[in-house]
Image (cartoon, rainbow, N blue to C red; front, side, top):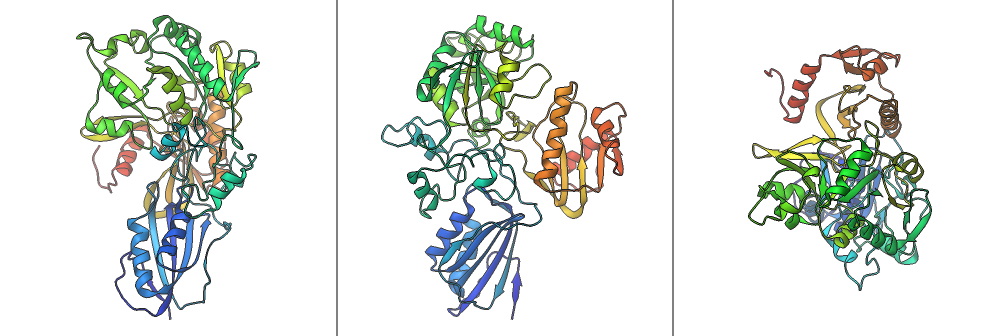
Length: 522
């Protein structure tokens, strides 16, 4: 006898043993979901298993019906903070005599699982990084199941360490013990590492000569910023260029070398209080600044005068602009560096004009050697470029202007499934998308397709998405403008092409974002 339900709050009681099978789709990989299920089953004395699948996660638990009911309710109410479910399908089965509880090896299959974006450092990891008694004290690559790199390090699904750029770092006994302990916050945390076994920092000059390693490299990099030097920092999803935001001469030098005459620079403030000193920050804007996504937030600058600390910020950061792009440190590396510097720095993309951001050290030396004075690098490979996201608050709601770190590649859910299709975006501020079944996976911000380098990044991103989800599109959607490079690419794919008028695409994207159905005016 089989009983099925999609209701997550089943109330039928009873002590007779039953077996519950649950299939979940959504963000359930890389968020501590399997450890959560393991602990939850233990608390209810249930036997069974949980496994990552290529479309989410599956689990079976067996025991008294009353305990299974409670387990199923808590599966929804107590889930990890970064997890979300697009569907939760439960099937009731006869008992099978399951023994103990196991986290099984991931299974292969059609790849439609939601990849979690890179997530800013959680409060627990922050405390460890600044605790002299902790073994991860001042370690710039500290993370756990609730935070750290995800999208920028994954090579393939499902999300296991062997499929990430951490696969070459073998965990030391202490890290392995954490990884294997169901009661630990780092149970099955795929990027888990510590100073003994994880990535390390180095400080290089413009020729690639090493000047310092580890914490000494970080401290020397901070001292160089205070001296007015330009630092190229290998961050989470690519390089950034940093310079002291108070020193007009240093900011002017960065503008000159990067050929960026007037376009505003974003800044990184050490903490929320420093951001509030510089700008008017509402409660909603403060929450957005401090969110797990940690985007650049456009804030209205405080007027000069009255001894406001904003007066110390160089006017060259955002010339003549009443708005300022501000972000807070989002990795342990940024947290440690900003703690050493103690005041805002310019933090802009590490690239040449109209080119994608640099990903590895040798590329950065070649392209940024004429801009940066020093390079703070590390040996954890970056799999794909992920720039900083940009957001603002308008009409009392958060609005993402550039969707990248913290947001990509989370999908939009469709009510009706459709055949696999790829959409190639426009010429300016390009983003690509893949539709698979009920989901549309949106890429990170790619940029303007004006240069060969930018167009190469566009091609790599599309190929990367199609490989990641093992997708063979049945058609390709493009802008109707015949001169867009993305449109020309679409017509060379050898697939049926659907051309969409630009402003109609804007309207439909607004409808999708707000979950509106036709008919609509725009």
